[in-house]
Every structure is written in C-alpha cells, then in structure tokens.
Image 1 (cartoon, rainbow, N blue to C red):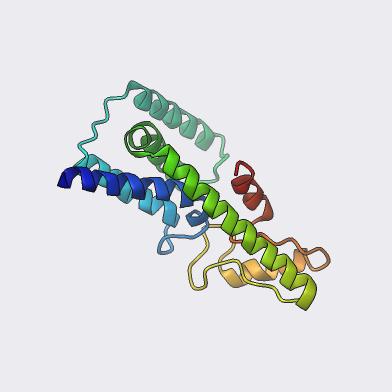
Image 2: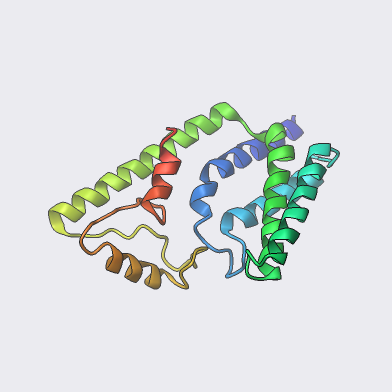
Length: 193
C-alpha cells in the first residue's frame, strides 16, 4: 500500500512535470547549460532508475542514441554547432529526453491527469494573455511575463536585456506572450487545448 502511494505520487509529479516542462524550459538552472526543466528531468530520471528499478534494455533507446552520436559528430565536423562543447551538451540533452520518452513516460505518464492539468495551465496562460492585452490597451501598463531574478535559458544574458530587446522591436506593435518568452511559444503550447 505504501509503495503504491509512492508510485502514484511519482506518477503524478512526473505527469505535472511533463505538462509544465515548456514553461520551465525558459529558465536556466543555476547559470548552467541546463534549463530548470532539464535539471528536474535529470532528478526524475535518477529517481526512476533507483527507486522504480527501471532498466535500460530497450533496443530502440540504443539505436536512437547511436544515431544521435553519429549525427552530433557529423554536425561538429561541419561546424554547425559552433563548438565541440555545445555539440556534446546537445547530445546529453537529447539522450536525457530520449530516456524520458522511452522509459519514464510509458511507466509513469498519466494521460487523463495530464489532459486536465494541461487544459488548466493553457486556460490560465490564455487568461493572463487577455489581462496583458486589456491592461496595455486601456492603461498602457505592461505586465512582466517572467519570474524575476531567474536567469533565462535563452539568447539573452539577463531579463533586462530581454525586456530592452522586445521594447525596441515591438515599440509600434504590442505582442504579449503571457508567461512565455515569445508569442509563438504561447501559440504552440496552447493550440492543442
């Protein structure tokens, strides 16, 4: 009974993580190359391996991982990634996602619960978007869309640079993005809901 409760908590937390991962992916984890979502996925993967006794015996995992290694080496040789370090960071990131998709999701992802949480999060982000638009057009107030004090996992060195860039680019055309970094990210996340 106690083990089932722990498993259901892990399943619920993992499902919630999958729903929130696109939001958490916008922020860097302690100024590392990992986002907060990727750092949590590392913890969840280790938790799944050690407590759930997941064993990597899926031949597809090794086939895809071999493909990623060859692809990364080819891309590095042709300097598409810019550096060997960024190529291996991408390889590690892809391996982590592949592990989660092939091993953690089939065992711990709860589809019905995920749909409920996903719709709730999509509705909340859409509501926040409407509030941003209304306050901007009625009172010329711009509500920040980022969590203050957390480094972005993006091409900007700080949140100040992010806001300055978008003030300059969108000074004549207001494009709110709710809690996402880009309006396109918001559209991609909320469209299925």
